[in-house]
Image (tube, rainbow, N blue to C red; front, side, top):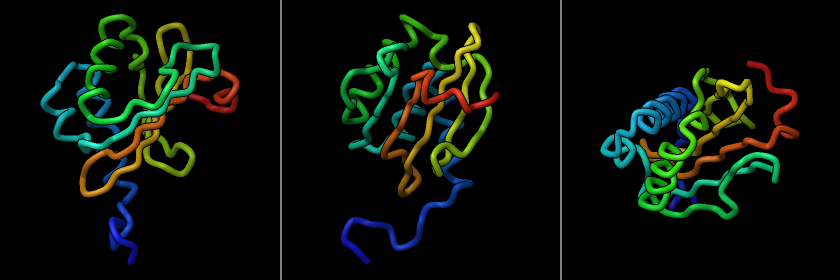
Length: 133
């Protein structure tokens, strides 16, 4: 076993539960729930491909991710998706979200020890052409 790596892989079912809990907490602005779900050293990656709004650089740390999400909720709440379904995204537990305008976003997570350690948001329409809701 490598140092810092879990002995047993995290389950897909636990990941789906965390992804859903994350989305519900983010959409409702429940900072306490988000704080419980995110690992302190979590990292968020987003990809808009220059065509959709996204963070230009990875966002490192739960505190910064919380501030980023608060900004999204204030400026463009539709980014959190008005319709959501569970999905496996690039082999990871996640969600497919459809905004009011029909735009599709995906979110995948990596988790360890019952907390989210990485979030991958994809908003780039060219990378999402094959995704159906």
